[in-house]
Amino acid sequence: MKNLIFTAFLIISNTLFSQTIDITVIGSWMKTINASDISEAGNDYPAAYTSNTNQTIMTINPKNSSKLIYVFVKKTDIDWNNNLNLKIKRNSNGTNGNSSINGGIIFQTITNIDTNFFTCTGPFVNVPFQYEITGISVLLPVQNYSTTIMFTVMH
Image (spheres, rainbow, N blue to C red):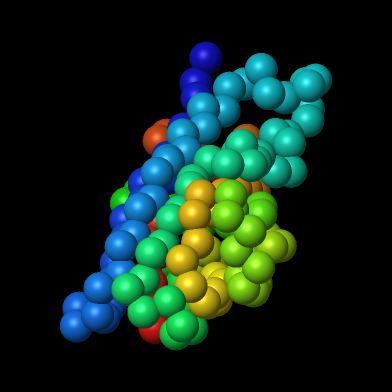
């Protein structure tokens, strides 16, 4: 039995070195797709696979909490097939209320170019992210596919 394996790695970047922002990101996602995922002969794989709703947890604590913070997301392909489409969304405002977070609550495609994910002001704690991958097909070559997800935080 051959398997397709998808792996996402996470990297954080702070583009403003002159101002301090403490950033913590915890989580990665590896999905093994087996031939048994096909329900009957002649069918293809499911249209989408999703991760846990809290697959990645992010906390940002800026030293100046009154400034608007921008969080961007992109991927850097390691071994990737262009037919695969990776998406991300934010599932809540986190554990401390974080009422000043805007955007990121619907799945958006992660491309190889920085894309605005969401904005916020002040610190936010334990904000959960979820991933979705589409484009998996019996027509894809069987191999391990992997990409790195990078978050850039600036204000």
